[in-house]
Image (tube, rainbow, N blue to C red; front, side, top):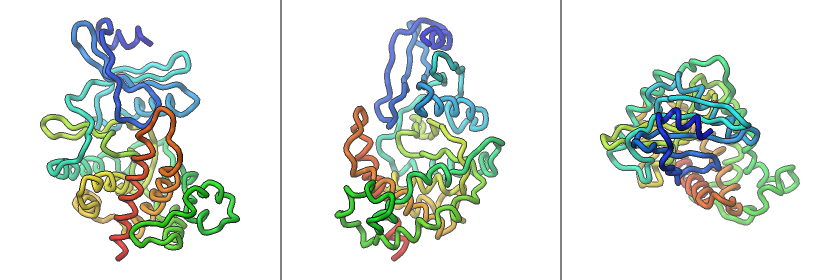
Length: 297
């Protein structure tokens, strides 16, 4: 693997700078050579999803084009997958700014033109892929349900913003009708740590790891609560995007499903090595529920 990275760099490795903002236990580092050239390396082992995600991202690079950093080379060896990308001159977003909103709007239109309809033949439904993470609200309603033990730690917690478990469960029950018919290739996880901002303000989407299909607006429903965490109106983020035609009920359904996963998992103990994961889930869940409550006043 070292020889592979050195060949991509065109020189010997002098320094590695691991990314600090991600939420998976895979390699994500800027590598600098002794001559000063740089590449970004993503790598992970096969078998636990990390290597598979790296490989999927490399395979998607040709379809994504300039939505993400250019791919330089890939290697699958010794049970690992590695992908080497050009280094985008910028940094992962720590906080959303007012000037990012216009950039996000433009990015949404580029996504819609390039990825809807989906340009790939080998895809899977986002609705189906996410479905195993659903069920929080139904499980809270029925203490005898198979999932009741998975929500015992949140069973005594009061939901914020006047939301009820009954309402959320009813919305989540429409998950497949709302999301299955989508035709757009999804990033599937757009949030600040997966967006690089150039000094010019241009935004790049990184960490493409899925071949998911959903309505095009689904990616923006994932994104908007993250932007809302910096004080911006998530409804405006969606309505000023390329998806002004987003289905109102479908958006509510997706928010209910996302919020359930975050509410349940965010209140679980920290994951060793990923202390930032649970706080992120709690924040995302809170923003999703606040937005959902505002949409249903």
